[in-house]
Length: 173
Image (cartoon, rainbow, N blue to C red; front, side, top):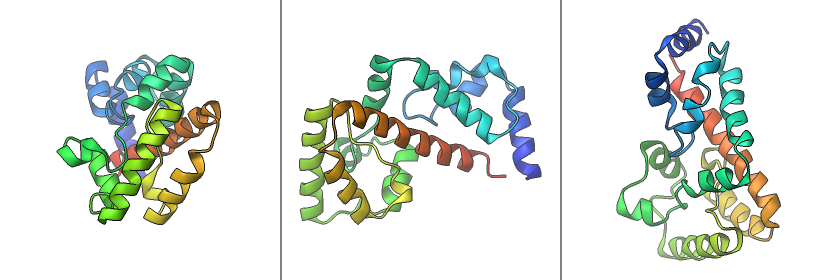
């Protein structure tokens, strides 16, 4: 606990540019989420920091939210194939075996990625570390049937879960 307090104090004391640099990857390719909250420091704990970041996302509105979602890679998609995933995404996808799929699994995920993006206009996003590969595939298939407005909200909730886990990992003493 004392280590987390010290790390929070360190984050709170950083110049705004360093604060943004340190937290810029918490929400995939969206450093603006950290930048937009730097002036609201100090944050007392991880929860208030996380809430502030997600509040910045919700205040931006639908177009910015869709842009944020589109900054995320597809699961086991072209970024993974090209080796251009962020270190966070690589670790997350690797943790459930999405970087070592069978040919059938790869083909199925590719098909689901395409269908999902065509229907909803952004990639399927799920906090993979909270689920098994089978659960991810089942969620993928189930969520494909959602209305796009519902799916936007679900995807943003998944971003919230991912951001929370990334912040927790960052604040590990």
